[in-house]
Amino acid sequence: MSKTENNIIESQQRSRSHFSSCASYYQKGHILKNTEDLEKTFEDIKLQKGMKALDIATGNGYTAFFLAEHGLEVTACDITENMLEGAKKTAIEKNYDIKFVLHSAEKLPYPNESFDLVCCRYAAHHFGDQKAFVRESARVLKKNGLFVLIDGTVPNGASEAYEWLDRVEKLRDFSHVGYRFESEWKEYCREAGLEPVKSLFIPFKQDDIEWYFRSGGTSVENQQAIYKMVQEASERVKKVLKIGWEDGKPVWWWIKLALVARKT
Image (cartoon, rainbow, N blue to C red; front, side, top):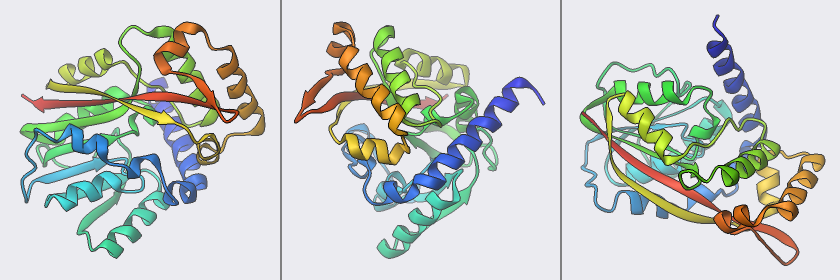
């Protein structure tokens, strides 16, 4: 087994372990329940009834539910059984006809050209091989099908802010692998035969530090380290991420990248 394959397996094990233990916190209410980013991403993209969609790393299922509400035939996958079970339960309660499948993002068990749309929302930073994830997404897309990625980022070239945020996320959640710049995701897409057609940068405020720590299973030691990082952040980092304090608690703004690419 190659070093790359070992790294993928290890990252998948970390993700499975983390989300198995923290699934209940995500199911009680998660930032992704707010689907404004999806509405902005699809506002000029027509979602047609009967289109076949794959939601990769569905988690609580909020993206899959959004697509089902628009009449799409949705398959939702995740690597963590506990997360899928929570999403299934909600789908049944809301009468959504969604197929749930347990598997990773780097190796999709579907034939070539199976889907009109492949989505992955705020999960790719957990993937051990992000290039393989994009390649597999491209493989299962039909010609002219759309790949939609939403994930955290910082402006292209803002390396210091990237390093700060990446370090904070790794302290918070041991399953975090890494965010990527928009330019990197576009490069991965083009290498896989996907042509980027749209990018949005959507700011989102982190203003609930207690939920942030609970959902990440963050140790007290790492919580203290994050507080220290907020206190010691440089002016450049503070400016990019709008880091500050409210009622004695740290806040900052994530930047969500919404990238749409078409299979050529």
